Figure 1 (cartoon, rainbow, N blue to C red):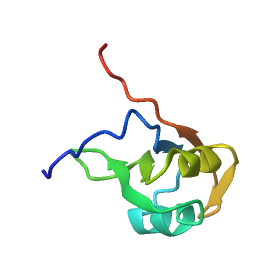
Figure 2: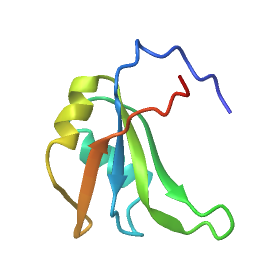
Figure 3: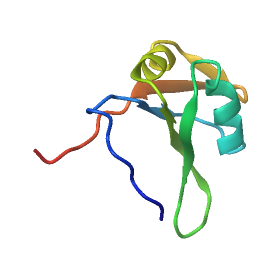
Length: 93
């Protein structure tokens, strides 16, 4: 669980990271994307039944500038070409 926190005026600080290797962990993503800015949260999505990584995750930065910088370039993590793009929150109006 844990708090939620107040949204900072809808700043787009989260990026979607797709195409990651099964070997890639939260620690790997945090270490890699930390070069773009301070990281608030980092998660690799896993199958809820098997626990296997699903090949994508999310990294949340402290600033939208860091998220934009990370989303503007192609990445190579654990030998895989990885796609990063700013994740737009799906607010229901």
